Image (cartoon, rainbow, N blue to C red):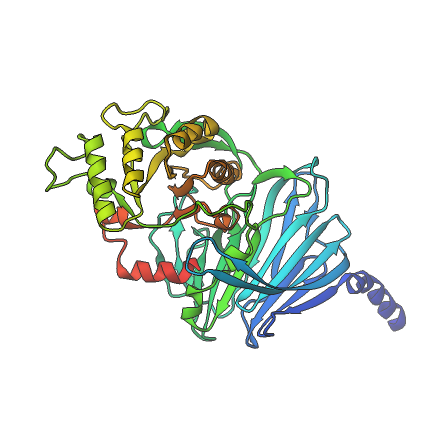
Length: 484
């Protein structure tokens, strides 16, 4: 009888034993190591300098056709590859970055792959469908668990909506102190004081996918996403912002060969390394056009912050007195102080029809005068207007000779709006227009693909100093530590 029971036990255990698969990958310097375990679920654990950073954390995707990636599928092929190259930058803090990593690609029998990539500074993974581009797939949800060890402290950009990124941080002494259900935007910085390790959870290369938030659920931080919009209306500020009134029951719908975003865990035992970490940039889509000679980063004078009030000017100033003379005054100031640009904020045109210019502001003459003084002019625009008529108004702005556009009030990062960032950056690049995104979601590397994007103003910056003290030294230090 004992032999029969033992035989039956082995028989029932056999499928689990056969299915269970394990893989390991180390970083180029061998200090970062990941262990991937595949059985009824797909999971990984991360080590840094021989110290455990995470418990086994699960990953997967669920679709409307019932398919569930990462749930009992078998790895039919595993390939390890290496990269050691140089990425040259058009602008930024570095002229070039070393792109050095080891990668493990696991191909599953259910028609998808998962790539794990290890840099010396951390790890990343992403799903990729093996279907045809014509195949439409609907993603109900994604599973991205981050089971961090030792209940670390958190600098948490907490929010209660899917429309804000210029957030103050909330400091928690431990993950366990965060109420269940609370969530915040990524990147999020964790401080494992016991191990002496800082951990940043982030993402890169969104494409047609919503931005990832982190939500506290028991002892786990979990990926959390806005559902795809069902009904959009114009509202919020001056009725020129697209507002989601109702949402569907899925997060994205895309082609079957879709490459999904990178989920990133940055690790460091030295805070200084966070300041020079470029994983988000390196994991993003490569540069999409060659000629970049026209892209010139620089400083700008900007009238909005001080309400266009010029106390010593020999003419009337202020927001009700915008004029060609006023903006020429700014150009003279920029020229005298070696500032490369003048940023003209709202008021130069009709918000909904930028071709309808303010008769008191001769934009074409201001741009001409700026070129004479070697000062480029960047024009503020509303995102919803350009999204509705991208070519019509960008063609006009380009024909006037503007250096670029500041595109404002996206106020969303769901899967419907995310592709618009790239579409606008691409349209601007074709016209040799620089881009300053404002009222936008946090950057996820799109400026690598389109280096004409010089800024994502998705933080509490200088403008907030007009009404509160949230952009204080503590916030600035937290920001630069977490943004990587």
